[in-house]
Image 1 (tube, one colour):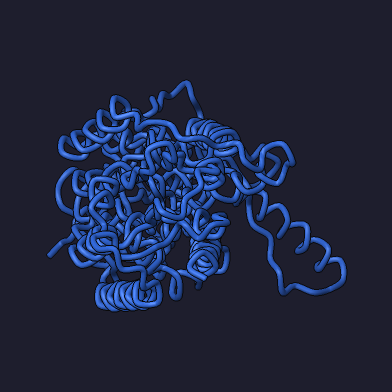
Image 2: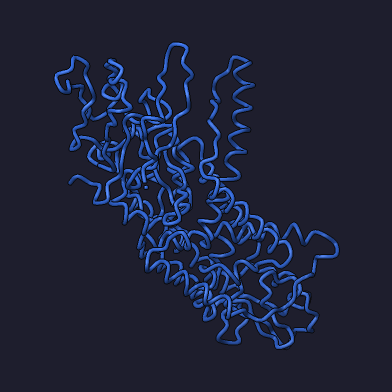
Length: 500
């Protein structure tokens, strides 16, 4: 019974989180966003005390159920392991292996040190939720988008336009490569050895293992009934059951409950381990009550909180303009002197110190503005670029989905009072040098920060940016007709973003 409940909860959580990361409608985060906030490392980065205490308390009482139920990368490993186990010769392929302390704890110490000194790319590389977010956003989302575009094309041919197409493009080649490598490594390890990633590499699993080894409710071997048939040991994907000594390594046990159903002699029980009582009904009621309390607390807390060197622009680069018979070149992404972080981030430093690079905001961005950074300093963490779109004033989706507090929830009204960058005009590239008064940037500025004025007594009006009014949304840079490099660009701000 416990195994069935665990599988149902794991399937629901895994499906919901994957759909959240694949969200193309922009509404799933309203219903499923709290699941991202239940992830352990995002809760730590957000200093979400109630979630942290809840997970640690739950683990201290009932073991590492978090790893087998809530963590999407852990559930994915179970799926791969189960598929591998369906082969006839591999149904009972596991065996007990000692804990690799020399590998687990140095990795955990390295990740903790990286969090303290702010080397977030290292944390993002090993964090399970971030790894799964990277895999879904980089590998699975494009496939889904291509499928939707195919349906949209077929619908359009039939005169139906309920499904609309999406632009599919490679947002970051290095992040894409890291996602592929991570998926291959995790899949191979799970296919051959089960939960090797969780119990050897994953820092969250190692940290929770420090608490689960003391859990009073856990699988227990009844030595009087055990016949040492080793079925439980050979089917344990965590490789933590030592039948020779009738012991279980609870720091690696993920409470999948597979051993309970595999024992033919009723020698395995999930119960209170510090007495010899075998009252399973009582332990099951306690487990369900604890799980209910934990889930309610998490939902309540979630509802309560809901709330770079510039590319050289030389005169030799030249420019092209839209219209006539001129070739319309694609926009080039210009690296800002200071990274531009999303509206809702308190500062560049605060944003990158909290972000775990889970790619949720990148997947949710409807304007093609957010993408993973290729800089080593902020590798795989999001940054804003305006060559494919601009940050529309009415859109605050990234602030609503961020589980770490790197982007605080804001309203569209509050967004107009947020300042993430300032536009600057390169008059050597501007079309005013050809005697044409364009004004496209001024017309599309949502806050009226760009005015057309006369420079040096010229009759041709040129754009002038009122830096105090500019919020850094990038509309001017994106809509500038100059190609391939816009005549106006946005640079980020090193200091705080909120004007107030």
